[in-house]
Length: 482
Image (tube, rainbow, N blue to C red):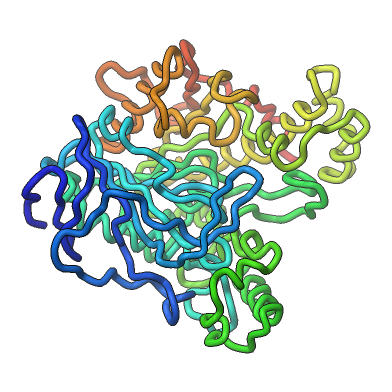
């Protein structure tokens, strides 16, 4: 790419964009990385954005992809012209590592909700945050539809391809791109690790609180939930059958009819954002589930930084279930674990907890999060270098170090203070070091052995950064066969 004429103008391969220049960084928002997925492009592979003439204003966020909002997010949107990204850079000159962020959930959210200033300036990296198709628009499948169940993956891949082509215009190194994400975004990173089409588009991977290997015991997420073998993945044939039934609900016999419907009409179908949230496996985008691919070594050979939070499921219990009574606790254990319920109740007795909800959350944190995360580390470390972490700042949220509470330390919306600020600075420097070299270590940073060196997991907590006995803390021996 050609050199930018000023710090607030960058020249992409589709045209020039003008961002907002601040004292120590410049932000470009709403930059198209693909054409609007409307009309015939709805439920089709993303195409490159149309070039423009002149300088395009990139001074405000683009549209969030269609979503209905939720109890924890009031964002609602219906405009499908949403395949945009945001770039935060310390300077449009130079050759810095580039970090591409995939936000979580898969049914709500947008890239501009994650301000990149602290990470970009504190780590001296270029930060890219993206929008991608969500729910029924990203995961829809239908018999005979090319790309069924993987349009969200395809969008993320298109954003990575755009970043390879255009990083230099924003002061980034196109040969040093780190893909990272949280929750559903972390599972998306896992998908790209094993997706043949994503090979060569990124050089390092970071996963925060992903569930690539996680299943769902009954009642574990919300009342009435049936057990599921995977939290993130669903067989392609099942996705296509769900799509066929959804088309019937919408009164459509073919894709042409479905593509002609207003987005708002599609969003009226109950659960349409959630039933298509899992990614489909068994097709060209994701031939097999990551658990199998990780075991086989069928993955991109890039360094990995991965981990989760100390109390993953506490916030999830609060949001999706609410208070748990002492009478409910054994019933939940029975529904989730059957004849193992009594042994689990003895291992996690209510007498050890202030509330039954905390006991239930601890059970699920260890079983649903810690066990598969540790297994993920084991499998990946057979084939590549893995650095593992556990975020454990008990001041991170009212529930402690719960799901996604570590994200604020990389993307603070407001300036942090005290020990939070100190841990944030350390994490930003470690994450940037990993993006730069493939290791979260360096001058002034704590030692951080790889997972392959004695199953090392690094605890990240104020005044307590160092090794944690992850197996003991999360009772992995107890959970080995349960």
